Image (cartoon, rainbow, N blue to C red; front, side, top):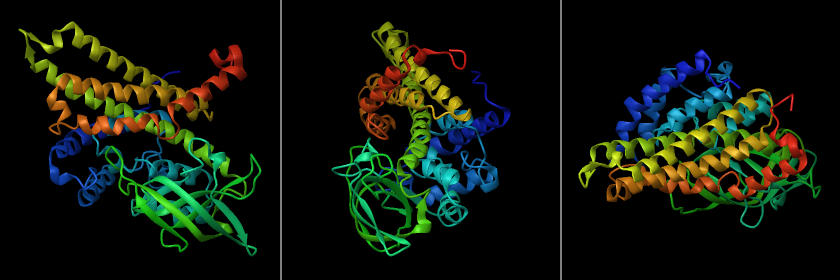
Length: 401
């Protein structure tokens, strides 16, 4: 595997790095840059998105024919890492969850009609989207535990009833994907449906308060009490829900890893600047062996995570599902992000624990990484099951074993 970026991806990476350094990072210190939920203020976001579009940095993950940049997953990995050196980065370039994963899914499996009314407004940045799968007493890491049901109404419609929660972005979303049970078949019992926020028969019960900063629209609990969806709004076909989740969640998990690497880097950058200028007991902090061990370990873990992420991205570019590789990356990068943020706070001392830097923001945000899109324990189970099935081939070198 050669992880050298192609010329186009490298050019985009450099442009994104400059945009983040010059336009986004300076804004983080201004309280006026934030909304009430510690994310970028909507008016400022609109201005920056216009600039990103003008510079050809919009929707890196989408085909050029649709208005994106058409980068491979390996190119996305490098660029997403650069953009999330700022806490504002991903959403400015329309590469933030959940829109990121939803757009890739619709582009891959949506009908032309579905792409026009559902995908394109999200791609253009006119509306947000949400993916409603997780449930209070059912589906989480295991979609087969879905209890929300869709039942036939007449010959061409479905009525959906049930509850979802921790649905990211739902408070602002105008386009939704909802997973519902259409039969009790263990493999073909789930289906995915598309709907609009204005469709009757569902409501937001609450925006769930969380420990960390929130994406626009928060994390919401939803109730479906008779939402009716026509057949043409089925994504793929009846019973294809598990396929939909597999197609969406694998790449989406990996894009989390791409972004988290950038957050971890930024936390270390802030800490490194501090320990190079701070003296204690007659010596720079950066010259103390104990400090060097801390930053060395944090940097190494981030780089291990980056290599795992790039390996998984490369396999996706080859047409592989890269399930075990994505699980490995998800576990390691989540831990590496938390270690980098924790190390940075320790080295910054009271300043790191305060809101004088964004490190405490990153630290609170980082704790979710071991939970979202599958808890680390679930991904370890995935890896163990691959090892059981593959035996010695688990450690093979590719086509030649």
